Length: 305
Image (tube, rainbow, N blue to C red; front, side):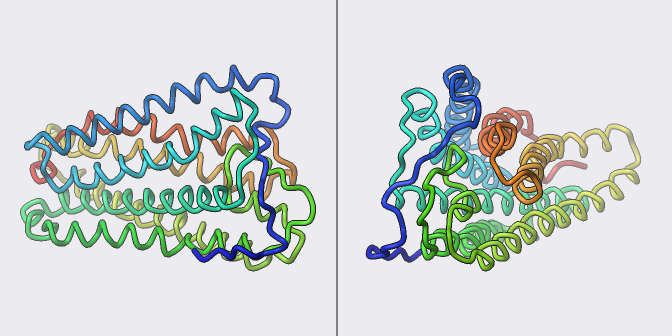
């Protein structure tokens, strides 16, 4: 992420509009967001602390849980404080470089979360479809490499977003019609050609959204095929229970994400209250629920059958 300090066409300050048409209700809207922020921070901090200190949780599956909790924390801390400043104090200004760094953290860690969900689908697939070889397939070294690849992929795919946005001229409005610096919301303010930005953002969305979801769906298809051949209802129930939290997190993460992308691409050109609220929920709702859901999933991954 290389940013020039002498770009004459890039503004020093952007302004975040908050939620269009609902400015008078910002205080009331902030209450559920504040509650979700509290759940996300406290829940994920507690989960990380337990994974670190409880020896019984020093298993490979909980390495992925720690990763997703850390990602959720970063997503919450990089967005909610500024949202609350807008809702509570009307502080809409954000420096251009702070905006670009926020943009990077939001997109990079969202991509990382998608990658962790794919890794967890692999973990579930091996645990249920090939349990006798779980420990030899998913060794600590292999899991560490998967974790490193997830992080590198997230950074590699999104590090260009701030640079692409920074190179464009912004001679008109500097008001971003959101509560945070989303890449395409910033690019829409530019006066120059944005074809490269649009195509690259669309390609990344397809690769992460469609590609990752297709891989997860394939993994769970194989899991279902295996589970229906288990000899007893108890074995099928036990195998299914190990996937419940993961499936719920997948739905909570990708569902609002796909709706937000569809509204961005095919909705009205101006931001509506529904579009902005959905974009906020996409970042805040999953982290608030993830730690609660994961706390229900304490099954030993290598002993599902």
